[in-house]
Amino acid sequence: MQQLIFGLANGSIYALMALAIGMVSSTTGIVNFAHASVVMMGAMVSWWMMVICGLSYLPALFVAIAVSIVLNIVMYETCVKKLGDLQNNVGWIITLFGASIILDNIARMMFGTEPQAFPYLFGGKMVTVFGANIMLHELMMITIAVVIGVVYQTIIKRTRFGRAVRAVAFRPSTSELMGIKSEKIILSCFAMAGAVAAVGGALIAPITFASYTMTYSIGLKGFAAAVLGGFGNTKGAFIGGFILGLIEAFICIFVPAGIKDSISFVIMIIVIIFLPEGIMSAKFFNKNLSAAEKV
Amino acid sequence: MLKVENLTIAYGKTEVVHHVSFDVKKGSVVTIAGANGAGKSTILNTIVGLHRSKEGRILYKGEDITRTAPDKLVSKGIRLVPEGRQIFAEHTVEENMLLGAYVEKDAKKIRDRMDQMYDRFPRIKERRRQIAGTLSGGEQQMLAIARALMTAPDLLILDEPSLGLAPIIVKDVFKLLTEIKQTGVTILLVEQMVDNALSISDYAYVLETGKIVFSGTRDEVKNSDDIVKAYLGNV
Ligand SMILES: Nc1ncnc2c1ncn2[C@@H]1O[C@H](COP(=O)(O)OP(=O)(O)O)[C@@H](O)[C@H]1O
Ligand SMILES: [Mg+2]
Image 1 (spheres, chains in turn orange, blue):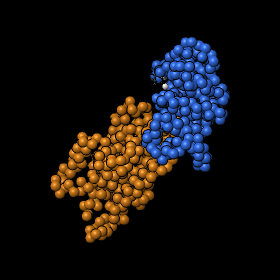
Image 2: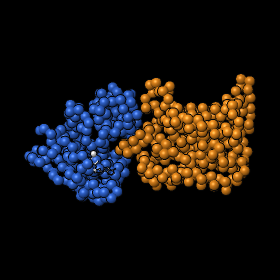
Image 3: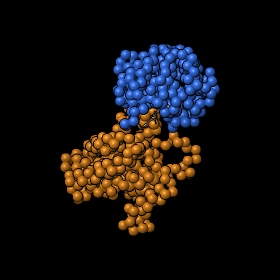
Image 4: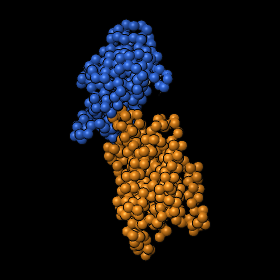
């Protein structure tokens, strides 16, 4: 039970990362390789706000969200927009990797190389669920992630803004003909992805410790989850994230802890080979799902 | 209504439209005929702000709109029904209509307009909950036109509305355009073969490799043997 909740909790953060990566990739067709660094920055900034500036968890988180939104917008303006036609110009692969390394270095300089203890929500309070001791923080991770997922999905499916996001994802220039400013929509998606990144970073930091190395220890799992679930697919992001989290939580029964991290990538490679569109593309999930059910 | 002056348009360094000028009078229907690749879509996309001209001016109701953004032009009353319809295939039919009214913020106005459109397009009303990609080609063209009419434009521009449609469906489309004309909407359309277009047009231009090579009233077009041979199948 503890392992199950632990797996789902971590998985929900992977899901949030996959979700945010999907927000950007569905409207622009690009994969934000710097996303993991923004997650890390979200964790580091909230740690800083709490420990150095003495803020409590929520205000610290809001500052981190604001910083991550700004980071993502700056990244869009400098690393993506300047490149012009992204379909023909794959320069974003380099510019976003570059941005990732720059952010990691900045974090290392500002916050040091030492991993820092990060406070749990509710001071690490435990609750008993079905006889198992479970940290309230972990339950909150799952709850918050699912709420974000549901809210995002509702916005995308039911609102004027969501319609426009899907329109831009599908036909950017036709969207312009409707009077939609594609650019503004894309920018909003980057901003939303930044906010979600900060939340994910701050929620998982108590478990991993806050450190500039979170980019690799945690961030890459987000990409694995996105690949598992299929890019730009909310349901898929959560299924991918949860599967990854659960596998990690239970795999240590079968394999030495040292190679735990490589397992997720072995799975990712297997999925890419057999189901390049993600596990949601498997026949099992698509009995009569139309293409429009994606997003 | 619309006046295009000395328009030159390029993709990168390649100039594809050269010093084109034409005029669309208020309340009229104007057709530009031109073979595939002549530069018709390029001109239309430039008028609606999707592409920038290299030289020249575009005037709408006397105002210079040469470098105006597409959303502003929609608000000013110019709508393009793009080549190949370009409906949002993964949205529902109704969502396509709502996207057509994207610049309109007043929910009541949108609702009223939608009801008017549903009255005029009963087929679309029937299918409003369907995914737009499941509509037939003719229905998609009707949807593309209805979507453009959601903001009650003054100038409706259509890029090859007959493209890929069966002849009887094309007749329906042009019947509809005649009705739209009667409501006072000015129409500019481009076609490769202008049989149907000419029957509703007041004035026509012929575009060859980016240059206007002929202009005249409907009857002048019909009296020009060369034009009839090149752009009219069977009149
Ligand atoms: N995006 C583009 N980039 C480069 N060249 C283009 C582009 N679009 C069209 N062209 C070229 O411009 C010319 C005119 O094209 P277009 O306006 O689409 O013609 P039409 O609509 O009359 O068939 C053609 O030679 C075409 O190859
Ligand atoms: Mg064309």
